[in-house]
Image (cartoon, rainbow, N blue to C red):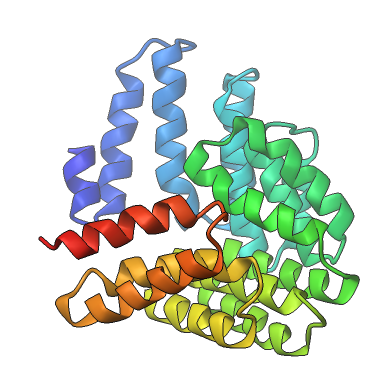
Length: 275
């Protein structure tokens, strides 16, 4: 019933059904703990600020050493931050040192403009994150570490926006900042903006940002990955095969020893063989 209700978008019924699952387990048991954490994960997004703190503290009181506390605290803090209660978010994370709380603390610090402290918190979160979750964090942390203060400030603001579910706005801000950036920083900002747009589900914007990257920074290392991504997307449709082949041929000819060249050669061979 929980699964069917969630599939139908009926969170209230799912929460009520999960309550019955919780009650079916022995108090204090690991099964009850996991079931309770799942119920809270479903219930928390629709709760008021006071109720959020009450739910988290209730779980902490019943299961003080629960590994799920880290994720629940980060979820509550993220919701509070999105609602504008940054003080409540920071308070929720006090005393927590798991990967999810460290990541959430890092984004709060980014919003405050404390880039160095934010990088430390984000780096601390990486060992406990799944690869799919860690990739975006790694890219952002790496970028922040090699930018000048003005460019890093723009990247920090955009990264925080994306974390709050505003990836398209973050990508747009980065693209604007790239126009004013000095030297190769513009290429780095455009590359991150393209990835940010992709993660936000706007592949078209991501592709356009990569085309801009190739136009404005053709010699930048970031243009290599951009060309490969564009070629793969273009090659997915018959009308884009010529463009895909052109991009790949230029990539292999221009950067034969680059890290993406082997992938580009394989992709080129595949396209030339045809379906």
